[in-house]
Length: 398
Picture (tube, rainbow, N blue to C red):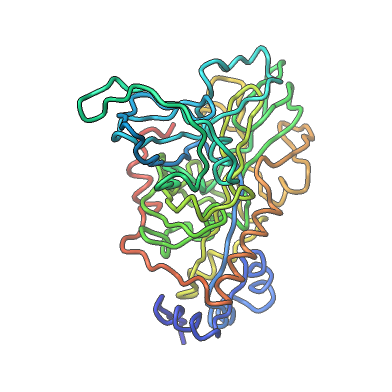
């Protein structure tokens, strides 16, 4: 008899303490041992995790009113500019913003860069942050400048809102040129000196539900150590199949998520300001998504292991990677995690930009939350565009 479950049924089992929850890593082994049909009937929820740099991140902050009031025209937090074209005392701090007196200069790649991601981590760590603002003065907002120290608890509302997170798949980056280059995937040595990747593979959330049968608007997630939600598909949302089947290569593009949560619930362990040498600042974000095992198909996709998940190998030395001219083939995550791969006949050492141990910890934490009944599944009010819709919309491909 075919396995068919609903979100409501699984949530009732969670409330009763009877839900069977496993991590995606555990599921891979279980399906190999018992088969999809049996495991799909036994398991209710599969947890996933990823912890890596996610540039398209930031936070909306409402500072509250000073006396006299000020309409903030320009705002800086620890000398990092925030966007203020929202309302009088609202601002958005972006993870990649850097101070105006610290211009990006690849000639001095060793310079430490403090940016928006570091501001967010400092706020979450309850450190004091210097708020400076200027205004042009109006009858109702007469004050023209203010400088003070604040903490996260002094801010009325702090909302982490990340327009593009949890990339479904990512390139394996290499450098065919004769000089070292500095990229968002780290320092790439000349002449195929190394290879970097930034996906958790068999724990990566969107590789476990590639057709978006369970993930959509309203999905409840682990976000930055607290509880957050998927609020839309992310920008640059080009879902692909991300598998190699029948000798055909898939997965040039990746799906993404737009996510939101209460910054005051989050932890500096899972929101980490990060500096990429010669590139700039970003924020390393921890995300975990529960996948309800509604049927055998969902279980089958969630059970795909590192040996069946592939990333395109791309040369980053020729402008920005072009899928046609820079593609050097595909490599499995099992090979990437082995520490070395072969590219153009040469053995190349590999290293992750994201953290697999931290991804495993996120999946394990989310598993515990669900087992304790502290975390119920959020049934989407609208599923996200899947691979077919993504392929049709991907006008930028190639």
